[in-house]
Amino acid sequence: MFGHYESFFIASAGASAAFLGLLFVGFTVVDSAESDTRIRERRTVLAGSAFMALADAFFVSILALTGGPVVFALISLTMAAIGLIATSRLMPRAARAGNFARDFPTRKLNIVFASVSALGFSTQLGLSVALLTNPHSAALQRALLVMIAILYASGLARAWEVTGIRRGS
Image 1 (cartoon, rainbow, N blue to C red):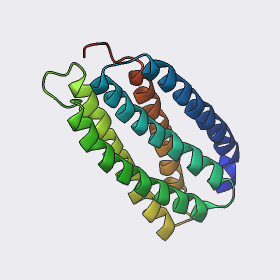
Image 2 (cartoon, rainbow, N blue to C red):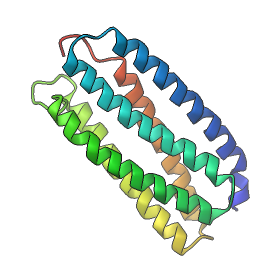
Image 3 (cartoon, rainbow, N blue to C red):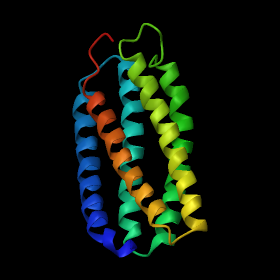
Image 4 (cartoon, rainbow, N blue to C red):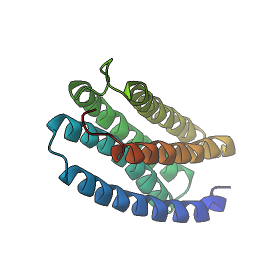
């Protein structure tokens, strides 16, 4: 069953590497022209969380090619733990930068982004543990593949938002 996903992992590793490169370029271009430190911090937090989601997809995809479901589960578990740690460190920065302030124009979106990160990495962690206990479960393997797609969606939405913060927000 696991071998059927080799093409997916190859395409995913390449796509995530490309998206990570574009995130670096886009963030550098947008951030270099900004003088407001609060807006720069907001962008840094969004870019950091986008980076974590895309890096997770990259490392899970590329390392899953080296083995079967156990390797897939172990790298997913590791990246989920790293993602949860990173999210816990980015949330206070986001709060200090005003991303969750009542008067911030994209407050609800920022709350959704933070919630999706915490919930997504937690779900990935749980599914990874479940797959380690039952490595032949096709349903668990597919569920972790869906998590990669969710990480892409989350990371790309944040990367898009990095470039969309308006002056004076």
